[in-house]
Length: 120
Length: 499
Image 1 (spheres, rainbow over the protein chains, first blue to last red):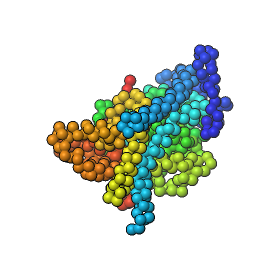
Image 2: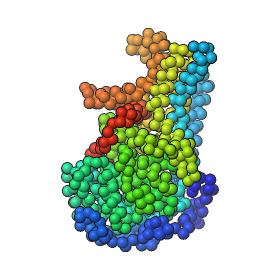
Image 3: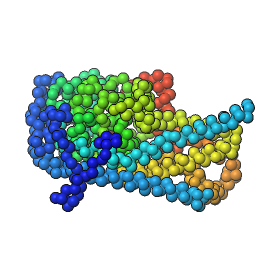
Image 4: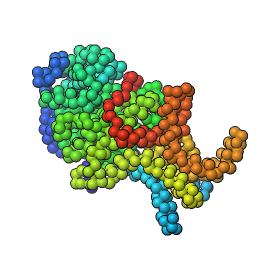
């Protein structure tokens, strides 16, 4: 979101008991992002292998196909599920900071009042 | 001197006194912006993408920390095949190469050891060695530059990469927290400082759309961005991370601070170590100020680095020591010209200081309450005990005078309180003098009773004034044209990520 652009209100997700959920960005694909071949969630892991010969350092001789002890799909499924929740939690936290700013300002007002009323 | 000239001088001095409050007023403005951060969030352009990420770690004699860091990185909540760790060993003379080789064997295809046979040129040269190797292959889509001692929370990398779904974003940085355990008074001060300087200040920089610095321990760049800035890290400055941040934004790319991606770093546990680190940062910032001199206060479309807000943020920190010295000197001069006016100016200055202090301290502790619970004492004592007393005296002079009278009577020196002029002059000088006391904390650290005296002087003089003293020393070094040698902060591996 840029300055001046109206903030998009979160949609309510009936499956989540009416909790707000964020719209997924439209038409986002890794290729658009200069991330050709990146793994978008749910699309499976990138399959590029290391072209060791193209790397300059002989130290890279220990390169071998990446050993995925946990399948990427498992990660990604969990992450897709949690993405919306994490974003919502973050938004909630940031909105809470606005309230905390008001509390901090209220403390300042109390100090001014104390000065004027009791220690003037 | 004519009467009108005298009046003019008096008001000039009053203005210089009040200029001492400018950094704090600007800091308040910065903190107020945090309240609207939720209106400027970038999440609606995020998506859960997992670019193939090369993690680049410069390492020089990091045997104590590098193994654990790699182990932690392998536990990141990120697809393993989209992650590769490149450790650039800058001609280490300890067991660093063996540790890296061990991890490369333990995590085949995921950890790579890049060795520089001739090192010691500085972090940016080490990073460039790694970038050259990584960019030579088209596997990498994003690069995470980090320090060897930094520990990433499992979700932190993917919380950062989701911002790269927006093609306008070139770089993302995370919230760095002080993680030394067991800590000491200094690491707790740094812990509080990082709430204000990272969790708070960077949120407000998100709001104005200009970020001052990608933390050296957590810089995520898209490949495109690295290529846009020339494929190399600047080697001419001591603040290579700030230069990278500026170049990224000047290339039209956005820099995002992701406050919910947390990484833990080891910070200096001694004032000498802190002084060395911050002197480098301070000199680097002066170099950046000079290098981008045509940028300041010249807002252009699409580039917020030239905005007035960002300029105020930048210069109020950089010039704070000079403004404090100016305010003190003006108060003392005014004391001898017009005693009443001096007292009123002093009172206005410290009332302002108090209000800002209450706002920033209380808000900071609420921004990160988890860290706040651990460091709240250092937050309260951040300006120093004497400054806190002066602020209290500004807000409630009568009760404090009563307490002081009885305290001095108890100590057998009630006459001190009656020497009002001396107390007044001391208070006027304190704004600049606090930096001197903080400097003494550094000097006494290695002397007799330094273990006791140094923390005491830091609490009395203040951690904030200590940072101002470092900035002042940075100016002196730059004016003298001292060598820009890279003085590395030593790490011992005492970072612990809380459960």
